Amino acid sequence: MWGLIVKGGPVMVPIIIGSIIGWALVLERLWVFRRMRTVNSYEFVQEIFRNIKSGNTKSAMQLCEENI
Image (cartoon, rainbow, N blue to C red; front, top):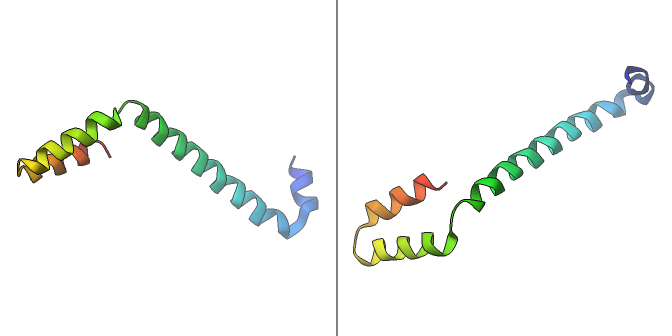
C-alpha cells in the first residue's frame, strides 16, 4: 500500500486528506441521523409551539437545546 502512495507522488497527499475529511463527514452525518430517528418531529414541534403560545419561551429554548 505504501508503495502505491509513494508512486502517486505529491498528488496523493490532497487525495488522502480529502478521503479522511470525507469519511469524517459521513460518520458525523450517520451519528446525527441516528439521533434524529429517536425524536418524534411532529410532537417536538407541537410542544415548542405550545410553549411559545403560552409565553413559556425558556421552556421552549430548553427543549430545543436538549434535542440538538
